[in-house]
Image: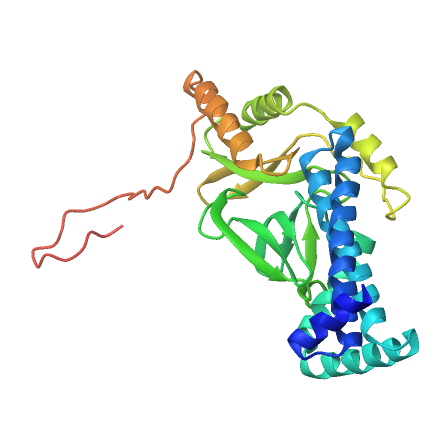
Length: 308
């Protein structure tokens, strides 16, 4: 083996020590790659969910990559003390010259350890809102929702968000509040001449029939999160119909809890039921902007406007 190294050194013009270091590096990297493949295969024997399998591949890549850097550094540097000095100098240089990438790395560590969100969660960071589909060392990617579309409909764009935004902007996570559901509201306005009491009861009955009262489920979810959050009592988790007076009529606010990403579908289904029910009733009429002219006279000879 030593003779082979001497021959390689003679052919390449490198010293025998450098050639040995190159050979050790190749053996180390190859061994770590094979070992990682074996570990990933063993962990996936239990038929993990796609999201979990993805996390196993990602985390194993970074763990074995870190081991590879340390082991290769040990080969090329005289001792770990020199390695520590080298890494300290590199870290100081990165902190000065590459501030944003360094912040992104620390934010990635924060996301991995603290887990403010997970793959598949819907988040809003600054002005970006979407479902998390990828998490990398410097950024994470979201499938964008909203923007030029109404409600929570996907736009088809994938937006890459620097991890450092976690430290600069407020982060809203849809599925990790007191409960997994989110509140949604939409409005129905009827004329003042309509029977508003019957309309309110009708809307409340439709909400209960379509959405249902999920208060027991909400209470279970709140109790599960009691160790992570200061949970305050919430006695109004069921469907609600609120009444407001507006210029054009009596306005009802339909408020209910629904799963993330279903706001538009549930609202559409409710509107269909509301329109069908209102069509069968003569005492309930939907309101819309109108203008009434009372006591109008004939136009003047000069062609002036009508007088009210």
